[in-house]
Length: 392
Ligand code: PMP
Image 1 (cartoon, rainbow, N blue to C red):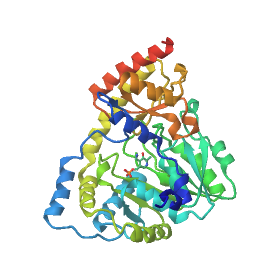
Image 2 (image 1 turned 180 degrees about the horizontal axis):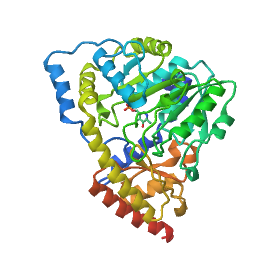
Image 3 (image 1 turned 90 degrees about the vertical axis):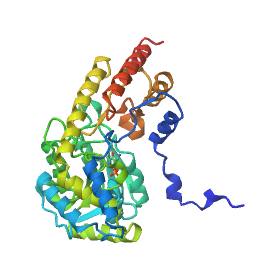
């Protein structure tokens, strides 16, 4: 008999399991639960996109594609990014199609991190960043943001975290879990620090399509930042294509060829049928994306207003599909709040603490659920919050 754990890599042993999973598993084992826990669109991928994939299969397009992805798709991504960011990326040298933004993040980190390099993560943050940094041999360094500042990164806090080992900063706007959107001014202040300390940025812009009030500014649109930025994005959120596993990365040719080297050994290429679907989505999906965005905006307004009315302070999230209200008034920790809410009212939310230190005192609610479900979850949450405040 061997002891399997004895053989595991110490890096992997050191990784923390995602705190979100625990709540999914618990919620899945219960009946009548309304889940505001999942970070994915409630829309099915539009039919024309599904049909394009089916057609590719009917035509027998089932082989490997180019390692970097179908050239036609890279061309479409290039047009799309030109329109959105004003930056012209070469389809043959500066774009790589990946298996979700998740793989793009992994490739970006593995391409630039030497053992012991520090990479800065702005918290509360998407749960994968720190683990991906560790897996790449780097050291994650957290910088906190605060609810009082609507979770916007303060440039002075960023500057304080920089050491001579810092290699890069991961930015995510609109943000998961806070929904915070950084505007041009915010980004310019960050860019000045990036330039001053000669750093790189991995800019995770997976929620770029989902902004509700202000125009979206990409980090690569900021003067001098194209050459320092590895832009990560994909189809999962804006195009409602989570299950297709399709993303991309855009960067200067030297960064791109380094990522391509890893990609060709570890992945070969993204699934062909998903790439054909993505061509259709990016070429002809504008109206569908706008329609979904309008619907999220309506739900955001309803949800955030209702949270505020029940006495939970919540900044108006400028993008993505998450509300991140404070639950401090209830005197429960975010984990206690989420667990009790699930047990007593059968509503699943994610405790803010899983997203980092400054997430404590908050919960993440995804409002990508039907209006009826949102309304019912709000009724249950209101009842729960009243009870907590009354100390019952
Ligand atoms: N970045 C962020 C901020 C996310 O929220 C997610 C998905 N939850 C991803 C990346 C990964 O997206 P994909 O499905 O394209 O791998």
